Image (cartoon, rainbow, N blue to C red; front, side, top):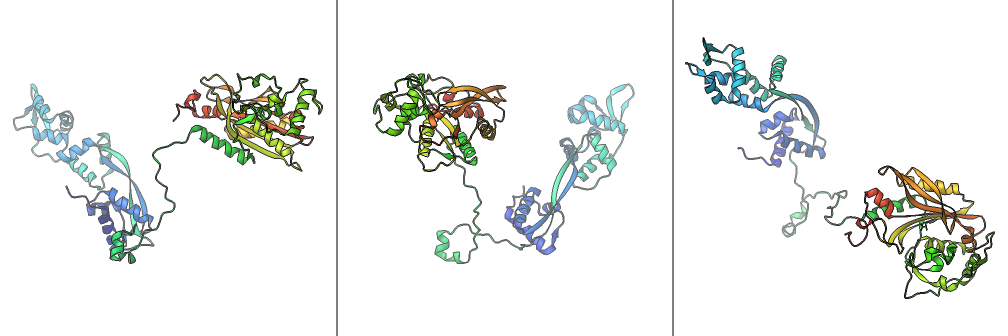
Length: 484
Ligand code: PHE
């Protein structure tokens, strides 16, 4: 077997040929003149075309190629000729011929009989006699001509097709001419300055390859992003596109005051029970609460105001001072709204946050004692429930949930309140995805927000949509010690 030519030799040969002849009309015959596979020439052409050293044009042709069976006949002769050649002057039995010729026997018998090249002795159908001296192997000749790429008459092709000896194949080769950057020989460009280059001083004369600033870095073989982080980022981008800015959520420990009282949540509300809330042992209480505001919150709980009757119970500061792990990020929204209310002039705002909250719940397939809450709010003059529905439809449709339904609900701090359901195409049912509402005046007015300013808000867990999007049915596969 001839040693494989390196591609650089093929390249040199091709450029030298183009330099002398201006064009190469057919890359296939060029490849056979060099004695290399067409694929090698093709690789070189593509490389040189990229540098505009050559210009190429595709030549697409459908050609007939030999089947494996036909390749055997081209090499060893047609079945009929092989058969005739195997018959000695005195004739041979079918059994003996079959043994010698194998698969070729049956086909050879048929074709040879048709050509009247064989006959049988009277009364002995088993002895095959040869009736011709010399047989020209026309089939073998045709197959060989086809193999060499010669033109064959349509009638012959039809015949070969019928015998399933040829199939049609699409092949591409190229015609070439010099490109605008043509060179008779390509310089090899240096990629690095080596110690040897420096020592010998030949770096001065080297031509260096350009840096490819667009090249991608090596993919890192380990480390994958957590699904929660992926979805978190997607949701964060949606909020940012909708003009929301992020609230600071770095306080996991909150006082009951900001988590419950400021939200007009009565002190005997069941959510405040240690069954639902983690309270802190140390420090068990906070001393840093804004006294003025605290007084107003106390008032509204005890006796109402701003058109409300309040809850009519004895509000206790001790209860409000209890530290806990925040049960919702609405505590953060409350702090932000209070801060906003302290500004000299009111300006409308859109806020969001995505961070961890804690609830003392029994852990099962869909519940953990901590999860991530997504929270959004808009405050402005004259907002309505219609605005809330519109914003929710916009927000969730960006998440790919465009079929929404709303169900009246109850939260101590919102009125009206709505649970949000989305139609899940996979599960073919409506699933609850969040909670929403308009913050009550009993919450907003004691803060000092101007009359007429409304706040529409909603919250949902990050885990829920992530489990839906990633088809995860056990929350422990998503978050916790089992997840690497
Ligand atoms: N805080 C609510 C919850 O924990 C979510 C919510 C936020 C509801 C804002 C209404 C308004 O589910």
